[in-house]
Image (tube, rainbow, N blue to C red):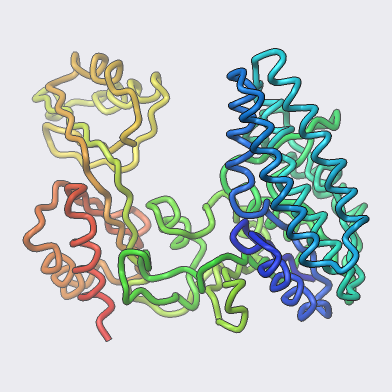
Length: 444
């Protein structure tokens, strides 16, 4: 069997939903399970709806619900000649959503639990429509509520799946078979008590790989609006091209440093079961896409990514020289303030670290000051070059640093995995550096 996950851009309107149903139809022999995100920007609209209700603006909240209602009903009417039954089901969901929103408005509070309940409607609505559209096309389609299958803890907003219980529920309730299409929601689950939860960032991809691992799928397919993982951001690099195959660890590095790929933790269940994860384009289903797998054949530079909004912190102290315990004391400060560090570079008398721009550094700098002289440099970008078996070759490094001219490099880090070379540059140099590197490293 296979798991096919379709993102919000893939189900944003009736035309795209037709494409999704057609793709599912073409794969019926493979006993598919279809996992869907919410339509388009529905989740963003639901976040804003809850915020308006919490802030006492009931009219604005209900206006957004009406907008969502119109969008979903329009899709239903366009997809089905007789949409009466589907529209009645949609109406029931929207009445429930209005009730929840009214409750938030009355108490002027939106807890994480209430927020999850509101956000769940996006996926619940889209899968209603997809299932009805599939049945209208003669497909034996069955809608299954993911909240019956994905069991999480009670960390609302980013529920942690309880894998043993989830696997048991999925295997008990799903029987994938050829010519039968299961449809379910990504992103949502429930606690042991049946309270709705969401899985947080990358939640729909995470749902897909959880289902794939539980059902021993042959593959998990992530259908989106690009042809696969690209050699660089196609919005910046006109010559970016699709990578046919990439390893799990290479994809994880790219995702962490800003590439538009599945987030590393979302494919962890597939990694553990050695299930290949495909990234494919809903609008061009015949395109090869990218296969994320345990090992990708060949070597060389795979891709370049960037991450802006980076701040560099440097602590300089002669007390580091031939001393022990200094680094432990330094990183204890970051641990105390729960600040994550991306890159680290050290010398005999200094340590430099990068953090996200939106971190409150005042208490960190205060507690670092007793250890040495602290300097903070803002508006930096990380350029991440991913490849395998290349960074020990002088000619490759020579091409990389030649491409950097005349942009100064503030920091260099070669990852211990030997697949990731990262460079820290001024944020204003990000695009020129990306283009120069791509031209030199991926020249025809």
